[in-house]
Image (cartoon, rainbow over all chains, first blue to last red):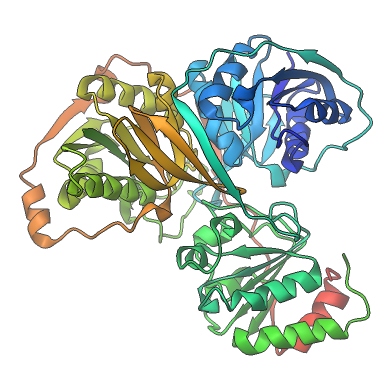
Length: 317
Length: 249
């Protein structure tokens, strides 16, 4: 029985994490079908059909699905779930929002935030902010699974030529409405998929001082992250938060500046390949997981860091 | 209007988790327990709405063993009016919890249900959404700002891309982000007063809902440990290590 994967997109293009979710879905069952629900979303359906691991695309286009309100999207997914044993989506704010509604409608217990597929019914997922890994077996007939995108490689965007089937819309309850979305626009790479992330914490002391972080990020073509403390203090917007209740990132290089390293922050970054910590407190817990630790005043160290980077002949992009 | 706020007892967020050697779970004996942090935000928001004169009654509910009652007492001490403790000595997964809460909602008939957006123990992030679906109510998840109107709520939600505003008709389920508000501490007189507030007790398995767990936990293990790194003396050494040793820049 094939897997139904719910695509995340902006009605023009697939969002990158959908490709990671497709890979995860293909590890459950190679027969991956993708549901694209959107408004004016023809191009998204075409993009999904071109992904190499995708065998079929279900496309439902209606203004009701423009902003993927969970009250509208969940009934559509439920309606088309009949032929599938698995419903899969990314465990980001997109998937987290609607998938439990689908699971409840199907009376199935959801498996959230899967980082490894052991077999079609057995999964590994982090619990307690990633301080333990649980191996769980789903005994439901129909399974709703959300996967942690950064734990799976993105599927190649090309090489597929799946057929696109138009499918019927579902009834919508009309008790919720989308008002607006304020997206932080940035020329920098996306935090979730960036090769390098430079993050600031409470040690930055103000929003203005985050310029020290962004200068380094721009030099390294990196994304900018932050601890919850820095977001709570208003130094930077919430979409930069890394941690248990923020984003999980797995870059090649994570530079934590003025971040003490609460377990909730470590939950979002400790799988990074190389971790650098810059902190004036030599006892800060962040040093216990850092590959390279620099005990220093960040207000001196960051300008020096920038000037050392400027001296390099080449920087990997 | 009336609010039902759901609170869960979890291992305190400051505790370093220790995995049991036999792989059956994590150590909870002699470990500090507290209310799940975003559930405190849910209680706080309810109390603020009551203080603003928009809400008449707040009922706090928890599901768990005898000690779970402490979380209801805490909610009562910061301003909830009465409590419900649904006893269960075993773990119930979010689907079962949502079914139990649905029963409570059918009896209490609140206009809103407030919960934390996620429990920091199982990190499932499901219960509020499931409850909303079972009730056929709208939901606002990851809420960081709540504006109550006559027959609806306008909610600002924290999403990966930034912020999103939605309007949901009442009745509705709201799951709360840590940035929604700053939970207050209970004063000693209020803690004393809370001891006199009523808590109804029920037993989960007597409620007539199927709470059999469908996801079986096979084992719990420690995540792979990172090997210890080194401290560098200065910025120049750091840059040199990143360039020549780690080869990441």
